[in-house]
Image (tube, rainbow, N blue to C red):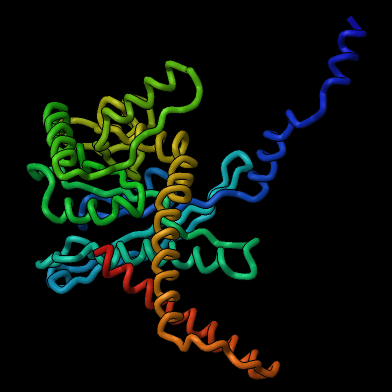
Length: 353
């Protein structure tokens, strides 16, 4: 027996500990995640985010009156908070879009959101191409929670336009806001209608990927999440004592709605998907699909523009230059390159919209 154990120890090289090394390195470095929330005012976006992460990210928010919303423009506001759980640190960034869908004329109200997502891709591309690549701050949007009103009769034109404009740039997770105003039957009917309309308009929302394991239970959970889309959610930061238990929810004259009760809403499913099971998949999808698509289009446009400029220049070979002249020419080329990058970025904004 001892000889068999000694033989196994001799055959053990040590690379089996690589997962542990990666785990320690990742925990030490920490994680970052950027979540965008979009939808018209009054749908409970701030309350839901606070309920998901048990924090108050909008304590200094200013509410606008009806007159101020007439000419309201879409703003981009970032809230960043550091969260730690069991020694794992998460740098969470919430990107809010106040003013979206609140004006009388909402034509192109999604343009500012598209520009912001592209700007983060562009900034990451510049940092990645720069001399210092070790400390790149990743502000790319990894997921967008889009809030749909519960009292409508399906998708509105602004909903279709927004999701079609963003679907190639970020993973979209549609939500039915304030689901406590609907009965279970109404919720089921509205979900089916929204899914049919998304398919009819060829809108691509986030697809839950099946894991590599052969666990049937994991596959059933993935299928359950797919069937539940769009999630019908309720948010609340109030803890009420009901039947001797302290529960988070909303008290009404006809009863109590529990936020974390799966039979009342899909809040637990959304939180599980977003934080516990699919956060890293959302980050990978942003990096491997959305950012790579932007990067490929940007480099292709940059190469085409550089080739056009080279053809326009004189075909004669350049004369020999002194060191000062060569340095000045190099600086001029860098300035031209930076100007060209910003010009291409603006052109890609116009082309994508």
